[in-house]
Image (cartoon, rainbow, N blue to C red; front, top):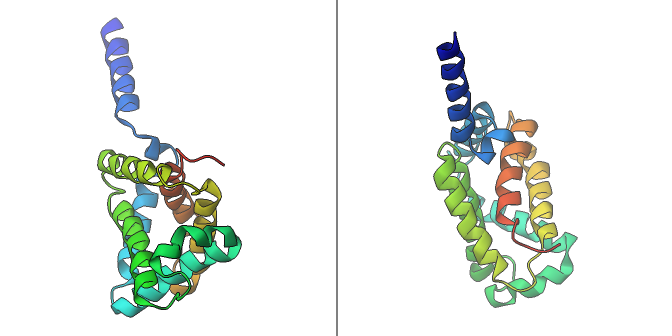
Length: 171
């Protein structure tokens, strides 16, 4: 009897140790939904659609926080439809793309997000509120371009990504 109890205890400890912080908020089912919806989003779209979507998300943050505009002065923020601003918007969007594609590999995801967190921590003036605004823009915009947008899965998984990247920032 003690052997069975010991084996059960060891199994429970192993399962607990094997889980990632991601598992506590973004379930395996949520991850599959988000990845499937994300991959289908750009299936039949050209690069211009992707660039316009990326710009709209970033411009929403700048509308919510006009002072953040100073962070983007070196990437042509004064001409938001120009090449430099679009390219920068796409770099941000591509980081989100990478994170979503890594959702099924929590160890690699957490390493990538920690790297992004370090990069943002090193930039003076970047605030957690900007990431919250980005997440809100994502949650407002995605239902407009996805037919079967699963708000709960996206809130959990995108929320995890954005909270982790902004974890090292001050208010």
